Image (cartoon, rainbow, N blue to C red; front, side):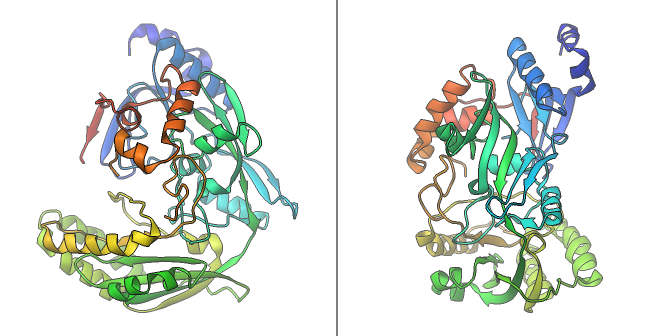
Length: 428
């Protein structure tokens, strides 16, 4: 950035900005050097940054905890970290309401703790809790439960800063189309600064984790999926071994999971991380590693009862490079069997379990669960897979006519342009 641009920063923006900041995603697979990096503390700061970006013809992206393994969060222009916009605005514990209004940068870990103080909880959660609520809903992040939607489906209203229409309040009854689009918008419509979330009275979950064989699960998939409120399972590639995890609400006395230093810390973290790292240099040992992990850590049943958020969420240990597919439930068992067959017949060494979760349908425009039970896809594929894709594109152009909030990732996947982030280094 030239000296002229530096002069254009007022005193407030100087206090919350850095030049040429180097940013890594959580997995350390992508590194980006942005022209300007901001840590705003108020909506007024957001307005100033947007005005600066428009004046200098730069794009701007809001980021959370950077869990995406792709270059979705990154930009050659300006980056806004939401980490300091993390306050709880209001908690309504009224029996009819049970809502909480928070700034979009609050981490789910902090949100869970705040809700617990007020006797409230989220109805469903993703396994990873070190996500911002804004990032989680912008990507339709979800937990598991065939009758429970993604996190975005729990949002009652939100505040969105756009290019053409400024600050907007959106809900089912106000700017409803924008609301449905913004609930999984990948940051393409603007910057979400506040959300109001539907909660419920705090509850305990009783979880049962048991070993199983893949064929048994797939042969009985429908009955297993409906056998508890929340069901997921993990398959260990190169084996037939699985873990089934089921959880239900309960009034029983809490009985938290007991962790062992040897089993969960020494082996389950340090040694496991080491042998997985070594497998990068000798991939032929991966099948043996998977067998060892299952036998040592997951071959025996586990039962525990705890606060809901402590059961839903778990420590995913060290950084990992992952992807995620959304598949209609009626095709799930065929897709999993095809995946197993491909692993067995290819030269791929697939370490770590494949997690399979189940989520209810919704009406969020770009949600993978839009109108169905639940990538590298480009515009032609997206138009076929998402019924509201074209409506989303038209709305994006209305709210962001100059492409202020578009980055190379969105231009590639939403508009079919062959562009990359200039100052980006990828290990993918």
